[in-house]
Length: 327
Length: 170
Image (tube, rainbow over all chains, first blue to last red; front, side):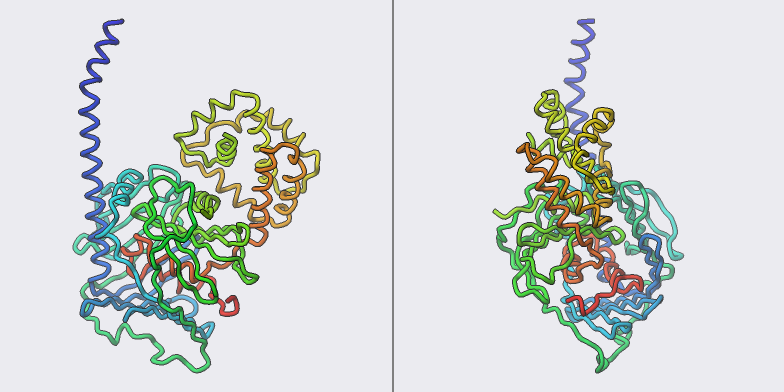
């Protein structure tokens, strides 16, 4: 018995390091696969010309939109028109995003900066991807009449949602995406029901349906402003494992006299924003809000309002909101 | 240690700390703190009106509910679901805030927790109904998965069922 135990120790002493090294190599390979897959999909979404119908499902509701995307002269242009209910549309191009709400006679202009983060994920984010998600290629399928590759990012803990993606086998374009909650239920999904890639698209097809804003409409403009990276004095003391801070600074938001502190944390796939602003009489109400795969939690702390938004379970945004302190 | 117990009760303890905290619960003092925090948590989860005697009643019930100490399932949804329930009922939450103060004001640890409970109830008096639009757009800029979807994030904006960003709200 004594011998057997010693023998076992001897064997495990030799084998364990080898297994450990193999496991490390395997996980590094998976991280590379995941990164490669993400880069390809993100590149395709930006640089392909396509037109199609997207079916969008959030909770029990299903709606469809027509999308037109053009990559011209190194710039992205797109138009999204809601096909159900009021004909709201979003037109993106020339560095801004215009949202038209005919039902409210309202047009909003937003800064249209999307960061193409995947070619340049921080090393911490890349590490989180492999440490906190299980990336797997599930096989082949068909979406919108096209052959696709199905991949899944399965979370290894309860702090993040699962993500399943169907990407066009030929171009890598994402044709279907589903967010899965802690109980394995889909909470949000989008899928192309029809799609033409490399369609002949010109700029006239990505113009708003209203050449000029009707006179009786209200126009709201959100002055484009970037977050200037700087110390805001606000700290999240209990950042959920796998999330690292990618930016911190102040930004000006419409209707607020004082700049709002904005901190962003990411695990490589999703992000969580923390906003801290001085409490005003007209401040947004506090509490929980869930919209599909997005959770929002606001809490008042002394004379400040803390709002946390993230594509994560409610418990994750809540944990962050309750651990924001001023240095 | 009290802070860790508090987080254990809230289901927010990290897996790495779990064993250490559970070990300390063998001491009477730690167990008393745990009991106290749980009484508050139990009250928070209830949506009925409560009275001063509730602490005693809950403590007795807690004795009969050893299952409550069970280690939460990995990635359990407990804290989230009870918090949702709390947010749902304004009146009940107000009562809870008051109760948490009155029933534990003689233990320092309990008081700290009660103060937190009080803050929370105030925070949840008016559950949010509309996503703050400026925040959402500012957030989307940094969400990595958005880069995959091209226009995907804007689907939330144009959906007919999306709450309209009423100009009056600003």
